[in-house]
Image 1 (cartoon, rainbow over the protein chains, first blue to last red):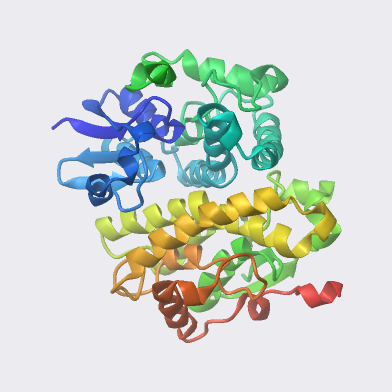
Image 2: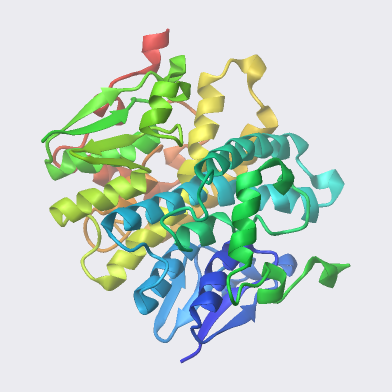
Length: 211
Length: 211
């Protein structure tokens, strides 16, 4: 049965699920959600996910929301990406929660407001505040990656797929890879994995669709 | 062996670990972290947690950071609070990730800036932006709790301990229980559990210490 992932190209949170789906070789297909025309606010979408969020994964009878839960589901199905012993499992979860708390939850809105809101509607102080918090997060991640190729252990895990969610996008939101050499090297390493794709190549929808 | 939890009263993220420790009856003790005098920014603290965050849990040889990981560790030790079947386990994780992404990660800074920063240093627009996002989160949680006593299943789980993290505090940050009747009832239900304690009674440190 083909797994369906409700997603759109601009969603780093959807990318966090799409990337391990693709890398694991599971049979999956994207279902485009027209976020920028309000689809996630419709009653029909709320029936699928009352949280009103993308991504949503449908695997047979199962409907999953929250990318972290999807990553753990892919790990359960494939035995991959979850850590190889009890300590690695805990470390992977630790970085998944950290990302949700300190990185993607701030990078998503910062990028959205800085790029996809008309300038007169942009809350500049809020964007600046988010960028300040994000700098602290980049600092923690960059320091952790010093001398490491992967966030946990010696291969890619859900920790990597979480933390990279918003970091490949070209639209500027205050994240400059050149400032963070360890993050930069780690992103290159992830992108060199066989089957890796950029979010805009993995999921339908691109800013130019609205140009 | 007594579990140590590095924490302070004002930290809702620490409360998310302290509450299930207390309710599970595990042998634990708080270790006060003097956050408001910069202890989490010291080199000594970064040696314990390179993420520079409270809480930290030490259980024998194990040092855990991220409250979600601690909650799962308590579940592993006690068999409680994690959900009773595969579906409940996924639902509990779903709300834990949602809380980290959409609720506690915003409520913590909103409350901090609105109450513990001097007014002249307070980024009002950022606080307002956080409050707007938080209102959307309260709405999702309140709607979910309609007709339910607990977030998942028919007893308290880590989902409840996550989402309530910042919701018992008296300092105003834009959350008014009276506006959210289902959240209000659910918080009363949690507070009626045998052994429940308010964050300021469970952990050392209180705003009046700095008065």
